[in-house]
Length: 171
Ligand SMILES: [Zn+2]
Image 1 (cartoon, protein in one colour):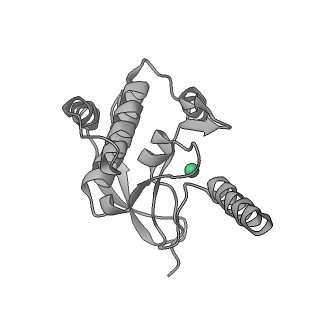
Image 2: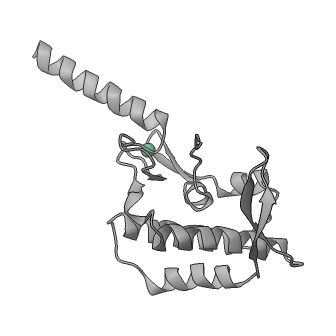
């Protein structure tokens, strides 16, 4: 069986803060628009709390009780339950089902629960803050050789190593 690794939703959500050529840009509004969501401030608050907890889990800072409270409150704000349903390939898969009038609360809850499972679950030791130059993204080390959030950071690092080697040789 082949597994295709995809970025966990909570990490994709946290990575809406993007550094590009030394400038940090907040792409959350674009992300919300792409997902058909409207923010009354809750998504920003949850995103920042998830980022702070990811930073803590990857060693940069202590856990803050306020961040935990934000994530836990969002997780509790909409009821959901797992259901068994056929996936596209015909195999049975678990889907989180929820039924509430409040689509925003459901989306917030789904993201918060993903963060809860990531930060408290078996993948916690695999969480990484990307060490790419100036990078502010997180990723799950889902492969022993994975060192970067994405190909662009890997390419930049390879180019920097190549440049450093070249300088040594010509010095
Ligand atoms: Zn990176």
